[in-house]
Length: 81
Image (cartoon, rainbow, N blue to C red):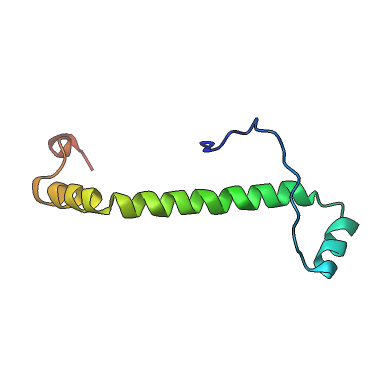
C-alpha cells in the first residue's frame, strides 16, 4: 500500500469528543483508540485524495477512454483472448 503521509512524523496529543459508552466499551476490550482513529483517518484522507484526483483528471480520463474506444490499444493485434 502506498503511504501518502509521513509515518515517522511525531505523534500529537489531540482532544476528541466521543460517545462515553462507546469509549468505555472500547477500553474494556483493550482497543487501542489512537491506532483505530489513525487507521480510520488515514482511510478517509486516502478516499478524499482519490476522489479529488479523479475529479481533477476527469477530462483527461474521459479523453483517454474515448481515444481507446475509437482507436484501440497498441496490443489489440497481439491478443489471443
